[in-house]
Image (tube, rainbow, N blue to C red):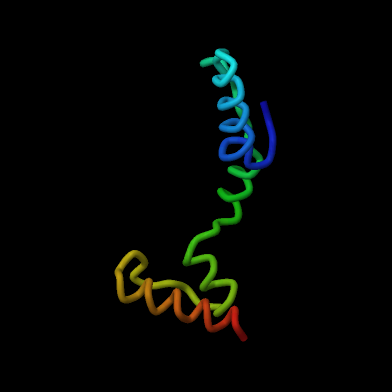
Length: 81
């Protein structure tokens, strides 16, 4: 099975509908290729990427509360501009 964001939207929706009528879905050996997952692996969508995109700088001390809060504020201010 393949699709864009299939793991987070299509498969759960289909599994719910199949389960609703008493059928299992997908089979345990089903292979899934989610092009959204490939996209996000190659084009990260995280605070570091946002700071790089909007503020043209790298995030130092990532995952430290103060550094993350300041970076998030700078990204928001850049987005508003």
